[in-house]
Amino acid sequence: MSDEAWREQLRSHGQRVTPQREAILRAVQDLPHPTAESIHAHLVAAEPGLSLSTVYRTLVVLQDLGVVTHAHFGSGPPVYHLADRPPHVHLSCLRCGAVTSVPGELAAGFAEEVGAAVGFRIDPTHSAVYGVCRACAAAAGPGRPAQ
Image 1 (tube, helix red, strand yellow):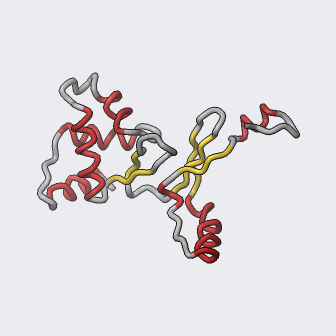
Image 2: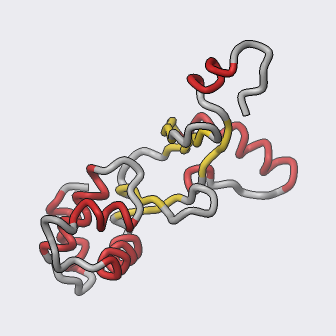
């Protein structure tokens, strides 16, 4: 979504376009898998008056308007993405904590099989899949469990 498109999205729903909202949206765009806390930490030096609650409230508004979306990684806080980005699945390494994004269609077969078997509709782009990344598996050596 272009800068003008999300500004118009805010205005058309009676919301103001403020420098803080612009900065928060840019942080969502620029930071890898940002949380409200990491967005706040990234912006607070340049925006000393920016509170964490403002970041949270702004993310709620942007999500309600379809400008951003979020995903959950375990019990941690949600991470945010621009809503117009292609669907993707997060792969989270249990050993080193690295998070990698892969195209959402890689999980489509799994989601379809679960749906056919038990009637449950999975949204794999809303959460993370946990396992062991290539580097950690290689470090464990052949025949040894990576965990």
